[in-house]
Amino acid sequence: MQLRLPLRTLLLPALLVSAAVAVAWTNGAVSHAAPAAVVAAGLEGDELEDVMNGIDKNFEAVLQAIEKKDAAAALDLVSKIQQGVVSAKTLPPPKLRTIEEKDKAAFQAGYRKELMNLLKATADLDIALVDGDLAKAKGLAEQIDGLKKSSHEVYKKMPRKKKD
Image (cartoon, rainbow, N blue to C red; front, top):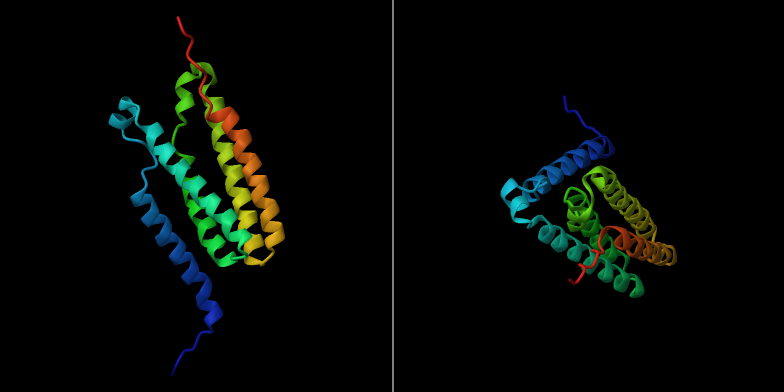
C-alpha cells in the first residue's frame, strides 16, 4: 500500500521547519545580549552601529532596485533589512548612556517600539514587492525613510558636550 500526501499538506510544515532552522542559525550567529566585557568596554554601540549601517546600505539598495523595477532584488534586500532590525532591537543605543536612570526603561521601550514599527513597515514593503506593486513599494519606502529620520532624531543624536 502506497501513501501519497498532496504537496500542499507538506508545504506548511516544511516552511515552518525552514523558518525554525533559520531562526536558530541566526540566533547562533548574532548575539542577543552583549557579553559583560563588551558592555563594560562600551563596545556594544559599535555593534549596533555596524548593524544599522548594514540596514541603511540595504535600504539604499532597495530604493535603487525599486527604481530599476527589480522587485526580486528588492525582496532579497528587504529580508536582509528585517534580519538587521531583529538584531538591532536587542542592542542598546549608545545614547542610553546619557539618559537618567529613572528614564532608561522608557527610553529603551520607545527604542524597541520604533524598531518594531520599522519591522512592520518593512513587512508592508515586502508584501507590496511580492504583489509586484512597485508604485506602492516606492511610497512605503518613502514612509520608511521618514520613520528613520524621526527615530534618529530621538534615539541616535547625542547631546553635545559643553565646553568649559
